Image (cartoon, rainbow, N blue to C red; front, side, top):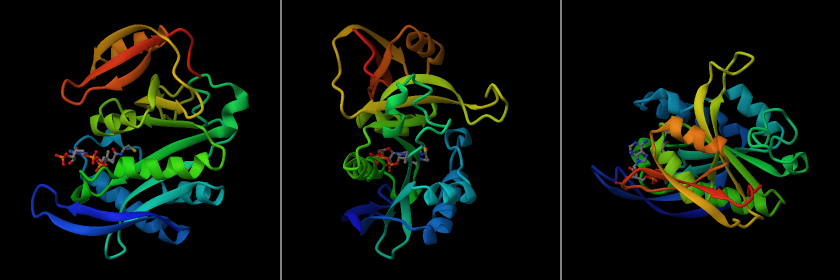
Length: 245
Ligand SMILES: CC(C)(COP(=O)(O)OP(=O)(O)OC[C@H]1O[C@@H](n2cnc3c(N)ncnc32)[C@H](O)[C@@H]1OP(=O)(O)O)[C@@H](O)C(=O)NCCC(=O)NCCS
């Protein structure tokens, strides 16, 4: 099934070329290529901490339990970007637990897991395009809570995710192997509830993007990271009359 198609720019800032793309759900038969692209993107990252790598085995078993991978294919049918989404149900990895979501809502949670774009194809808004396709697909199936993690050091991803309406609800270490998770990587947890409107704001605080200590204090006091400004790299934290979940 084709989820979208159009033109994009390859090598936008060097030898620019226009190329056709198609967006499709990928089958398990293309998982090796997905993992290869993830490795290529990781190898090219200046700060490796921003991308938590999924293994072939974990993704395969997740796909067997219903997880989906939306792929963007270039004119030669090569995967140039993908978005992996999962439905954790009541499993303990459900990030609904991290933000205090009511237990009745856990079955309506979608995890926006990993997204990568081949460096040659960056700047075509593919992170947002694949998110739009994912939202359309899963809201039709009755899911309304979107949750994801983003590294506080990954400005491009944070900006794109917040542009698409997800709000910062927690800042903690994730993916650690110790029992208390203290050896994990710092991650914002972002959430949006497609069924709920934002309630009355009571206070606004502006934080520098990189000031993690201040952001943690604000979240503890009940503020939500509401929007981020590209030029100033400032984040607006807002407190609402009641929490919006
Ligand atoms: C985050 C990511 C998916 C965004 O890719 P994208 O959808 O192509 O990004 P956008 O189209 O929004 O890019 C907007 C601008 O930022 C630039 N940009 C995007 N990601 C960039 C990066 N990692 N490094 C430098 N510049 C980047 C683009 O070139 C573009 O610049 P332009 O407007 O001058 O052309 C991509 O950077 C990536 O694959 N990063 C590594 C993996 C990752 O961090 N994934 C998210 C966590 S799972």
